[in-house]
Length: 40
Image 1 (cartoon, rainbow, N blue to C red):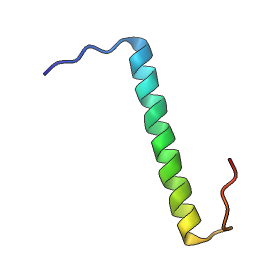
Image 2: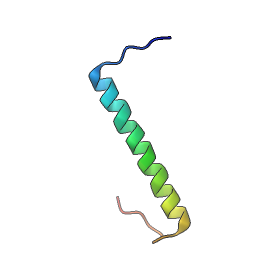
Image 3: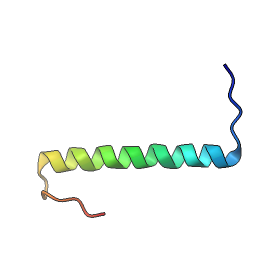
């Protein structure tokens, strides 16, 4: 299966990936109770 991505799609995918990573990181920090809250 080959999927052709436009430049905009690639940027969107990278942003979505970075956002997910950021949310995961925030959740990990929050669960460790570093400060108890995450600044957005």
